[in-house]
Image (cartoon, rainbow, N blue to C red):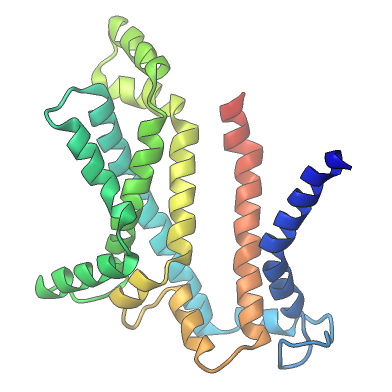
Amino acid sequence: MMRFLPWAYLIAAFVFIYLPVGVLVLFSFQEGSLPVPPFNGPSLQWYQTILGDEDLMAALRNSILVAFGSSAVAVALGFLAAYGLARHVLPGSALIRGLLIAPLTVSYLIVGLGLLIVLTRSGFGVSLWTAAIGHVVINLPLAFAIIYASMGAQQQNAERAARDLGASEPKVIVLVTIPMLLPSIAAAFFLSVTLSWDEFIISFLLTRFDVTLPVEIWSLLRSGLSPQLNAIGSFVFLISVAVVLLLELTIFRKGRQ
């Protein structure tokens, strides 16, 4: 009996985590206009509706643009900060690391309000660009923490060997450091994409007309629940799952090997 308890706990955990998502996906195929039992379907009419909705598709494109662009900048800056602190002795390096990671403990609402004040007082206004800046601010500490934690003695020894063989510092970084840290860099990048993709508060505060998908979904929620919302949620969820599976079958598996 005891040997079945771990499986029972595991099944209960998966049910707890994925039951809401399963219900969301199920009622995205609801034929009626209300996402409530009994289930009537299946039907693809709501997927056709969202694919034909210009506002939703524009918000989807904006989310993709902001998520990938801000994540690329955050990972690049996080890598440079991690490399500098891991490979060079700097005065107050412990304090610098703490300051870089500290934004992780700050509420996104506080970060968003601070950015809104600074950017508007500086004359930038609010737009997709300012939303992307906000996403860089919240994702840079995470990217730094992931990459810095992966910079161990193995990579440092390989870098020293490359320098002994005559490689310049840029070549060491491009040909040795980055390839060895590629799984961590990829993990930091795609985790940043995921967080940016779902982020609402900063996007809501720092955009006006060109909004991201979470802000557009919130606007639709103001008029009540509908299978259209379930369909866009399921669409985003399935894209996320496909990306995770693709990464697991390519980058992360190669990194473990």
